[in-house]
Image (cartoon, rainbow, N blue to C red; front, side, top):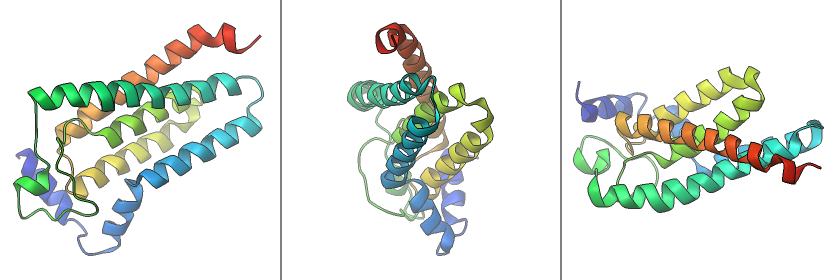
Length: 180
């Protein structure tokens, strides 16, 4: 099955039902920001030992994503690999939500979600089922909304996990300066 056909099938699944609204909510930056803030508040209140390190690593993962992914990788890749969004390629795909015309590769939503969840699961391994479900829902929503191909999702995930581990590595190097 071609990637465009997969996106079209996922886009048509539950079209016109509550799934469209659910998909919009899952991929909204407001939800991601709210979950990030609530998670950090929870860590600040209940994590006594490593709260500075964990919150620092989560913040670093956002900074790394912003600097590397949005400013560097997407800009460089756009000049070499420009992939039109599925709904612009196939008129059978109905875009759900805002319309974008930038390159679809790689998925920024998937990358930032994977970066933060990598840090969270590193410090709280029992949260891996939640992280997996949320990543799968994010992947589904990005394709259901007609914004991304599977390859965009996969590379966004790979980059995001890398950003998360880079943040963990850097925070561990900075830890002696943060905690005295």
